[in-house]
Image (cartoon, rainbow, N blue to C red; front, side, top):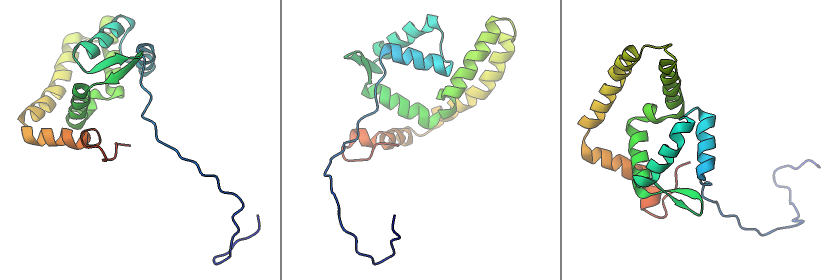
Length: 157
């Protein structure tokens, strides 16, 4: 390349008009979701069918053309849980909890001691959400879903 300095005139050699639209994130098929849960260390083969059934039965997601699509209830619940109890719905926490439950199954961890420790940590977090102002919680959910509720707003990154 020749050196270019400020103020130099440049010649346009070629312009290619093109248009690019952003695509929504790909959706999981049931098999794809199971594979992802396995990668994250969440769930067990005996629980995957139950997880998929509950997502649909409770109205959190629906199966459309073999893809799981989130429904408004699922999106609102996700917004609420991630804003108020983020630690407890994270992949790492869930996988860690699964590992501890496996240790209990293998008799490597005392279930009563584990539950006592877990409850002592979890209960105050839930109590805090239960004591929160309902209107503030609603506003948090609306802010999280503004892109969905109000077309023209930017979707989260």
